[in-house]
Image (cartoon, rainbow, N blue to C red):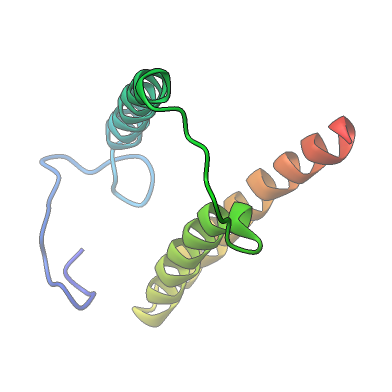
Length: 112
Protein backbone atom coordinates (compact mmCIF):
# COMPACT_ATOMS: atom_id res chain seq x y z
CA UNK A 1 0.00 0.00 0.00
CA UNK A 2 0.85 3.62 -0.41
CA UNK A 3 -0.23 4.72 3.07
CA UNK A 4 2.71 3.54 5.10
CA UNK A 5 6.11 5.15 5.52
CA UNK A 6 7.84 3.45 2.56
CA UNK A 7 5.24 4.62 0.06
CA UNK A 8 3.84 2.51 -2.75
CA UNK A 9 6.51 -0.13 -3.33
CA UNK A 10 4.30 -2.83 -4.88
CA UNK A 11 1.00 -3.30 -6.68
CA UNK A 12 -1.25 -6.09 -7.91
CA UNK A 13 -2.70 -6.07 -11.42
CA UNK A 14 -6.04 -7.33 -10.14
CA UNK A 15 -7.65 -6.86 -6.76
CA UNK A 16 -7.44 -9.95 -4.61
CA UNK A 17 -9.73 -11.69 -2.17
CA UNK A 18 -8.07 -10.62 1.11
CA UNK A 19 -8.10 -6.81 1.39
CA UNK A 20 -7.28 -6.56 -2.33
CA UNK A 21 -4.33 -8.97 -2.00
CA UNK A 22 -4.57 -12.07 -4.22
CA UNK A 23 -4.32 -15.45 -2.52
CA UNK A 24 -1.50 -16.33 -4.94
CA UNK A 25 0.64 -13.81 -3.02
CA UNK A 26 0.24 -15.89 0.15
CA UNK A 27 0.86 -19.13 -1.76
CA UNK A 28 4.04 -17.64 -3.21
CA UNK A 29 5.37 -16.62 0.19
CA UNK A 30 4.47 -20.06 1.60
CA UNK A 31 6.45 -21.66 -1.25
CA UNK A 32 9.44 -19.33 -0.76
CA UNK A 33 9.48 -20.03 2.99
CA UNK A 34 9.38 -23.78 2.35
CA UNK A 35 12.26 -23.62 -0.14
CA UNK A 36 14.37 -21.47 2.21
CA UNK A 37 13.75 -23.81 5.16
CA UNK A 38 14.51 -26.88 3.03
CA UNK A 39 17.79 -25.38 1.77
CA UNK A 40 18.74 -24.29 5.28
CA UNK A 41 18.10 -27.82 6.62
CA UNK A 42 20.29 -29.32 3.87
CA UNK A 43 23.06 -26.81 4.52
CA UNK A 44 22.84 -27.33 8.28
CA UNK A 45 23.06 -31.13 7.92
CA UNK A 46 26.02 -30.83 5.53
CA UNK A 47 27.90 -28.37 7.76
CA UNK A 48 27.26 -30.47 10.87
CA UNK A 49 28.83 -33.50 9.18
CA UNK A 50 31.96 -31.50 8.28
CA UNK A 51 32.37 -29.63 11.57
CA UNK A 52 30.02 -30.77 14.35
CA UNK A 53 28.58 -27.87 16.30
CA UNK A 54 29.86 -27.94 19.87
CA UNK A 55 29.38 -24.53 21.48
CA UNK A 56 31.63 -23.59 24.38
CA UNK A 57 29.15 -21.05 25.71
CA UNK A 58 25.42 -20.58 25.27
CA UNK A 59 23.44 -17.45 25.92
CA UNK A 60 20.84 -17.58 28.68
CA UNK A 61 17.39 -18.21 27.16
CA UNK A 62 19.00 -18.71 23.73
CA UNK A 63 15.99 -20.72 22.54
CA UNK A 64 13.84 -17.58 22.85
CA UNK A 65 15.82 -15.57 20.26
CA UNK A 66 13.90 -16.97 17.25
CA UNK A 67 10.42 -16.50 18.73
CA UNK A 68 11.51 -13.07 20.00
CA UNK A 69 12.40 -11.93 16.48
CA UNK A 70 9.17 -13.42 15.10
CA UNK A 71 6.95 -11.68 17.64
CA UNK A 72 8.90 -8.44 17.27
CA UNK A 73 8.19 -8.41 13.52
CA UNK A 74 4.57 -9.41 14.13
CA UNK A 75 3.98 -6.61 16.65
CA UNK A 76 5.67 -4.09 14.34
CA UNK A 77 3.46 -5.12 11.42
CA UNK A 78 0.31 -4.97 13.52
CA UNK A 79 1.31 -1.58 14.94
CA UNK A 80 1.85 -0.17 11.44
CA UNK A 81 -1.49 -1.65 10.34
CA UNK A 82 -3.35 0.13 13.14
CA UNK A 83 -1.27 3.31 12.68
CA UNK A 84 -2.28 3.72 9.04
CA UNK A 85 -5.93 3.35 10.00
CA UNK A 86 -6.60 -0.20 8.80
CA UNK A 87 -8.47 -1.18 11.97
CA UNK A 88 -10.38 -4.13 10.50
CA UNK A 89 -7.22 -5.54 8.92
CA UNK A 90 -5.39 -5.05 12.23
CA UNK A 91 -8.06 -6.90 14.20
CA UNK A 92 -8.17 -9.72 11.66
CA UNK A 93 -4.38 -9.98 11.73
CA UNK A 94 -4.48 -10.11 15.52
CA UNK A 95 -7.19 -12.80 15.50
CA UNK A 96 -5.36 -14.92 12.93
CA UNK A 97 -2.11 -14.59 14.90
CA UNK A 98 -3.84 -15.48 18.17
CA UNK A 99 -5.47 -18.52 16.56
CA UNK A 100 -2.13 -19.80 15.23
CA UNK A 101 -0.40 -19.07 18.54
CA UNK A 102 -3.18 -20.87 20.46
CA UNK A 103 -2.89 -23.95 18.24
CA UNK A 104 0.88 -24.01 18.69
CA UNK A 105 0.57 -23.57 22.46
CA UNK A 106 -2.06 -26.33 22.63
CA UNK A 107 0.25 -28.63 20.65
CA UNK A 108 3.23 -27.91 22.93
CA UNK A 109 1.16 -28.50 26.07
CA UNK A 110 -0.17 -31.74 24.58
CA UNK A 111 3.37 -33.07 24.02
CA UNK A 112 4.59 -32.11 27.49
